[in-house]
Amino acid sequence: MDKPKPYHHGDLRRALIAAGMELLSEGGAAALDLRKVARKAGVSHAAPYRHFEDKRALLVAIAEEGFVQLAEALTGAAAESTPIPALANAYIEFALAEPALMREMFSGLTIDRLAYDSLHSASKVSFGILIAAIQVEQAAGRCIHGNPEKLALVMWSLFHGMAMLLLENQIPMVQREPGGVKGFVSESLDRLVEGLRPRDTESK
Amino acid sequence: MDKPKPYHHGDLRRALIAAGMELLSEGGAAALDLRKVARKAGVSHAAPYRHFEDKRALLVAIAEEGFVQLAEALTGAAAESTPIPALANAYIEFALAEPALMREMFSGLTIDRLAYDSLHSASKVSFGILIAAIQVEQAAGRCIHGNPEKLALVMWSLFHGMAMLLLENQIPMVQREPGGVKGFVSESLDRLVEGLRPRDTESK
DNA sequence: ACCTGAACACCGTTCAAGT
DNA sequence: ACCTGAACACCGTTCAAGT
Image 1 (cartoon, rainbow over the protein chains, first blue to last red):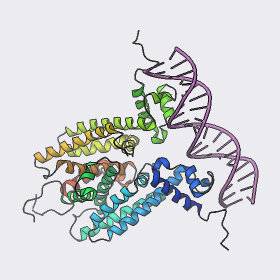
Image 2: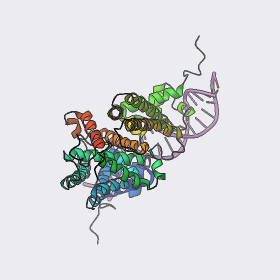
Image 3: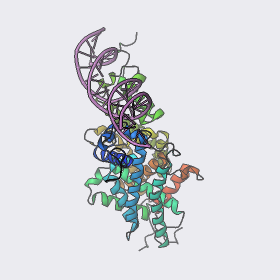
């Protein structure tokens, strides 16, 4: 009664990506081998080669899916009343929730970016959300003028640095602080907004 | 006439680390397999296990050596007349000169940090240099008061984010900009120093 | 004490053969 | 068209045996 399916899969490609993401989430990059992915999807170890040229191609597809999910999380945050802190928290929460995926997304797959164009497009969507947030703040007079792309790049760099350093346990002291990760993110953001150079004292 | 050496190596451990770093530099993480490292050091593929428990232990030792080299680069920069921009440039130059090493240093080896304590100590040296630089700027009245460790953490996050995003070609537009990477780093640093919120107009 | 060669389990990839 | 099973080269790791 069902539509005739080729063998037991309607969309093996999607199933392989999903299986790969699960393995990544459970055991990190080391646990993601192609034969295990195939086993998890219920096909032979050679079947994935019908859909992906090699293991790297599967990893690129997974990273691309990761960027789609990140963009979704950021889109939600951008709609809140204080978009900048919301975006920072969303970025860092995403990274800490899926550390292995985050590493894979930003981990040297893109050396020859011409070959993986769709991966870069996916990552640019997230960047676009940051640019839009800066423009909103500029319009409201809460952010200095200047090229919004460059300002967004500074902000992104700070988000990304905090996320990766937290991810790799490089700053374990943050976990013990009052306020924990959220407090750290919020304070760091204040520093970027207010600046490190002392302001004139008469400002309110 | 030479002092009797055990077989052909006086310090195989060091030779293995050096060989591993060369492979990393030449071909990235994918090119670093233990058998190739052994071949490069002129020993059998089982010999490394006399000095390293497993492949991960060698990677940890390599990452540790990377942090030592990073600390050296930062120490030189900290002595310059404008230490903060010098540190930023040193950090990013190091990352771009040895991308594969940089990835390895910050790439999830440290999940159970109790097991790799010396790696964390090595990374803390670099962080200490950043803290000291903040304290110098505070004493000179060029940086706001407040916990220097927290301020250094913000600065490190920004450095690290810029370095990793550049490394992974996430911001290719920077390469085409006038001033290139150095211009980007310098402008971004200005934003952190001056802040994103508009300052009172009468300040010089 | 330190190193070697053979051996084992496992992975990425290929390919002739099946439906 | 899409999938399978056998096969190949290669890697991490172990271990009995050599000096």
